[in-house]
Length: 187
Picture: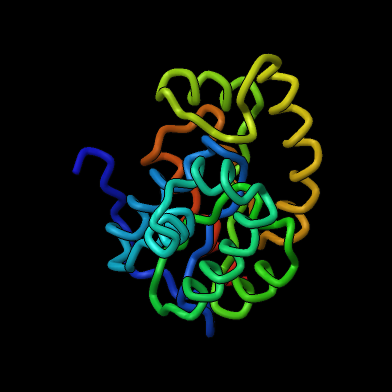
């Protein structure tokens, strides 16, 4: 793997999971997959858990049930993911809106906030052709800035550490996560 991270298993005290939180396009899925492969952990994407359970895409859930319906499904997906052991968990961007989610994650996971600039979010979303229900229509940059302003204090409050992915490649971000976790744990 070109982005392989060379590292021994990360010991996180009594916690065996790493949960990645942050805004859309911060790299939670890409970095999470690389971390899981490099550390010999399972990879769980809570959005994928929701889609498999609901037999609908995230966009279809938002269209048919609204954000409230989606968030209810997210609570169940986070519960299931937080019960796993030796996993890297990629959480949806709004997971921090419900404290029950972060409380569950905290019991089994070292929580890492992947921070990203609004400009990088828009560039990545457009480059990858990503359709996000909360970014439909005009004024995408304004919507991104507004959502980041609302969520960032929550990401910061609930995380154990922060890694800025704005200018980092996937491998570089994964190495930073491992390094920062090891540094925190050995203090």
